Length: 261
Length: 327
Image (cartoon, chains in turn orange, green):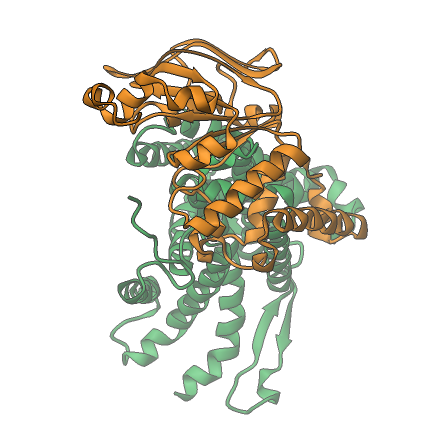
């Protein structure tokens, strides 16, 4: 069962075709990966799905509903949340507040009550804080809840982005290079966290990642892009031995000389 | 020295009242800047429009005898609410018509649009005022004009007594209330948190399901409503208004916002009080301090000099954080 489908998806920037006619269906409730060399169009692919860019052609559908020309905040509401390759936290807000921003659509507004500090509203506020705190516990950041987000160590900031994305309560979670810059211990923790999210929260997870070990461990389905085009798709074993993929990563000679074999 | 001490109580009272007005108007500048990085120079004119709307309602109600049937505090509150709704809607309209189409244009273009909006508002208000009253300078009576004496001399014989208008206390109370309400709203409510998120990173906020346009509209509404409320307080305090009061006052409120660190709400409040008190201090003491070389008319030079000195040593303002260069 596919939850997210793209068909003949296309995006141009001037003369450069960043995504060129990509077709793919992401199966529901499973972990997929989008890989490819630098400049393959992976992040552009994510930006098209989340509505930051409007495609020049093709379809994007979530549960059969078109996402083309839908505003980013509406797409988030429909159930797609993401993290970023270059961390984009709200640096001067606290760790807990960052998660609360993600909870935005799920919070009651109660503005007059907030200002006057009514008991009922105060109760709701506390409830929201508790929920945010539980999400921090889930990713293991609860000790840092009151710290400024920008003061967290790098690996923790990546986890906070995950917690903030979870707060949107998505059906599909997009992770853009979640392990970038992490040390082996942090990467192992992250791998466990991604598995746990998929199992316990019944999430569909799509990740862009350069760490091939992580990709091969986690992903059941892999989409390979190069110069904006789909050059391969399939399970980890098939992708590992696909000559086109090896060529894209290591150049033509590598295939001929059988480096990867 | 004795002269300065003698007038100090009066200087502080008047400075606080003026500072409260600057502070609340400064909030409008700082909020819009925080969200859009736009200096909304039309904000001074929104303040002015609030003063006129309040005065118009006051004069109309006094004409029909409605004013006499209501208790003055309720009437005052009603005038302020009407002015706030009007200027709030005006601010939202200005954003929709003049700023939103230019949002992707260079900031300088929006700034010029803001100047344009200022002139339009000045002339429209002047036109309506002249049409209705035959004069663009409008006077009204104060609802709480009575004065009382504050016996500061009983604390120490160095101080002189100060006179306080009841309206001065109303200004201080209302300004404080508005500031506390805004502070709570921004720090605790759902939309306040969304506002801060949008101020930091608009795109990321939208990806977290926040409707950015709604936040921007809300920001303009709140900022402009605060400006309009201050306009009413100002008209009640000084009695006479004209369509050009927004310019200089807006400049000083903007200065207050910069002094506190533009984009920082608590900074703007503090900056407003600093500028107000400095200005009053200069206006009553410059003559004495300089042996008569500079009179009270140099009060603005004094206040702005302080600003320049602060900015030389702390360019991000007193409460601002140094902006990191974006890579």
